[in-house]
Amino acid sequence: MQGDLLTTLIDEKKIQDRVSEIAKELGKKFESAKEPPIFICVLKGASFFYADLIKAFPHDCKCDFMGCSSYGSGTSSSGEVKVTYDLSMSIKGKDVVLVEDIVDTGYTLNFLNKFLQTREPKSVTTVSLLHKPEAKKIDYELDIKGFDIGNEFVVGYGLDFNNFYRHLPEISILTNTQLN
Ligand code: 5GP
Image (cartoon, rainbow, N blue to C red; front, side, top):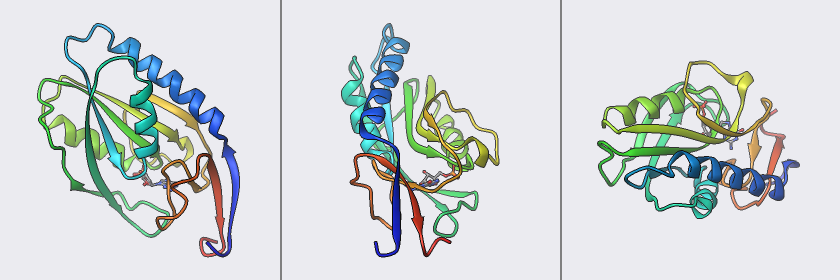
């Protein structure tokens, strides 16, 4: 977009290497599970990470999708989260892996974790590719994170700004004249 400056923060190789490590870690966690875990993708931002993660996961798994929106201005979260697209299968008594793109304030992860718990799963493992520790505003349980990053606004590898930049294979810091 006009006026945007993109600076690479995490290149494609680093992302792919870390995704493989996370898939291995999850593989170990579920190697003796009696039933395949259900991997839940939080649309749309986690979709690229999710696809690569389940391809690298070394066991059977089931796939489902959720949509949620957090209210707030363009690049900041207000803390109000709403489910916009619900799961298509029951997770009662099942192992669930919740796959997020980024944890910023923590409101979304906190909300989704509580939301899933009401469906009585056997376990919920939370995974996020990116984590902004300095932006934390609420307690949340994040079991596996790909990378800690600073408070910059990032795009690429599924993450967007106004639906642009999701297609980029690397993660970049966005400096947008309209953001500043
Ligand atoms: P939280 O509820 O933790 O504040 O925010 C989570 C959601 O905010 C993410 O799923 C994502 O949609 C959005 N978000 C937070 N930080 C960023 C960022 O740096 N880049 C992009 N593209 N989205 C972000």
